[in-house]
Length: 449
Image 1 (cartoon, rainbow, N blue to C red):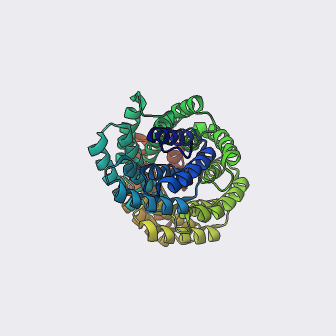
Image 2: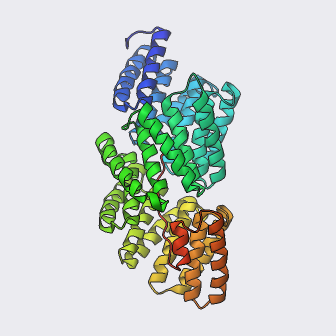
């Protein structure tokens, strides 16, 4: 079949590549795609449309395997060829553009990915229409971009639209694509601080994934990781979060190996769950080994590396090593400031924890100054009612008291409690800690790219 030049036969093979990829059989997809690319290139030349279409799937395979540097170079070259040979509005070129946005995210170029994907969405709408399956895929990716660039409300609106349209489509949409849009919606809700909604959506999505795709499918496993995060953020479901996090981590290791991005994301989720359940030794050991692997997958300067380094810092402080915690947080913050600026949520999360390090090390004025600056920035980026802003403010209350500013502390304390009551409720673990005058900690979970 590889030597057949009949366009219909080649289209059938391309459909098989797509089927294998979406079904989660990435290894078979890689072998099949490589074989046909080699044969078709020999028979028809590197600029043949079938070759370029197959190369699109091969780039998807590289990305799914976590070979991000190779995927970036491969898709960038293929996209350049497709633009010259097929034109900017060809369906293969458009699909390659959509994939290249993920490659930019994998490099940590979140702003560049957002710019590209906004343009890609417009092109898809012009070529296919606003609710065509091809366009909806770009919208799901664009939602990720918005989330990674601090625009949480826009991310939720986009993925809500994509999920609703994909889930009611009768042709041209796979269960994998529906589930991807579904777990992105749960992620966006969680980013907004809507933890209960994120949990409910995540539970429904996980049931769907297990039933339609199976428990070991990559989209089902990503859904499970996201659900464990949402459950961790709600006190009554922290034990459930531990069960799902452990199970998912084990499944990812068996399915992908320890160096795969999904396996590492599952491990980070597990360390965060272990921390809130008091298993500090286990969390610290797993975090150290996982954080050490991140640069080899994403590259040394990727924001995810620094976010996970901040988690390791947090674990060191909770384990009574504030000196090491401060060192790691300062390293993480320097890296995030350089890649994303201080006004990114990843940077500001590290700032909240670094202020706690400073306070524990007997530097209340420095902790207060950092906390005040961070709260101002968070209020602008997320709003005053977001859980991260409220947590930063709650920690600042403690620092104000320690820095002889009791009146300011009392005023801020009352405002915080009223905002907790109006949002996530006074019974939420964050609100309880804030009411008791203790410090809040915040961690990081790396989303799929």
